Image (tube, rainbow, N blue to C red; front, side, top):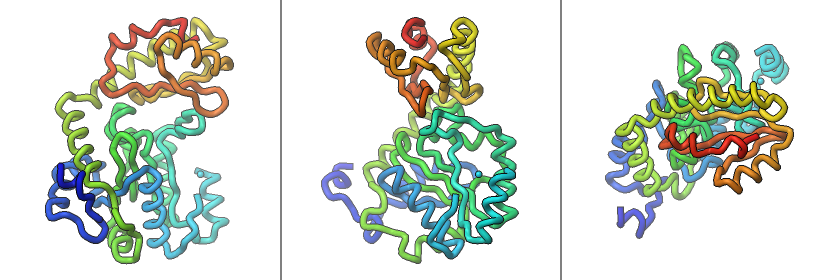
Amino acid sequence: MVRAIASRPALGRFPSADYADLLKTGTLKAAPQGLNQVFTATTGSDANEKAYKAACIWKGTREPQPCLEETELVLDEANDTVAAVVIEPVQAGGSDNHASPAFFRGLRALNKRKSVLTIADEVQTGVGATGKFWAHEHWNLPSPPDMVTFSKTAQAASFSSATLVYGLTSRTGSSNTWVGDLVRALLFKAIHGEIEKHGLVEQTARIGSHLYRELEALADKYPQNVLNPRGKDRGTFIAWDCPRREEVLGQAKSKGVNMGGSGDAAIRLRPMLVFERHHGRLIPEESII
């Protein structure tokens, strides 16, 4: 650990002798089901970019095109030039918008029919916050996404399930000097170990169900301020709309409750995985209405 911090290795060219073992016993142990390859990176943007590049290389084009009937129309109009469809399990930056598992299954089937890769962007949703380690596990897909990108709580990397895609990426220049960060890989190994040891994903699912019931009760009590609650059965990845959003967020912070806004009117919860029911009781009702 000290050596890795003091002398950062250029993992893309000169990985340390124990790096493969570190990934096998750490990062890869947390791999989404069916995904057995990893390309390490340093940030969420890097993870997404590398996945996009891999899709473009697989498809033979440098211009990826990004939605069931409308998506098919876009793909058809693109005339076989789309390399991949990139999807967030929850449209986190755009007001925390959710879609049904049936939609995602249909999208996956459409992509396979059109020979288009599916990339799940789990930079915000990955590592337990939705009550599953990976949010796309809620979809019950017959086959996993071709790639899953992640960062933030995971400390950054990109999984790829297709040997074809990974092989093309590894030998066609989709690399950089550092190719990830050894220290971050060590951190993610420790994070994953703690999550498994303490059952934090399962705990988050339970706490999320409780919080959502409480939110529904508030929506019934204050329908003018708690609109369109969403995130049921998605752990603590919960949000609602409020026409007084900025005022509510300000008064919440003044009472020690740190929540965030998204889009034009959404308020969203992002508690840590160690959040328990008694923490919820510390939140005064008047701070969120």
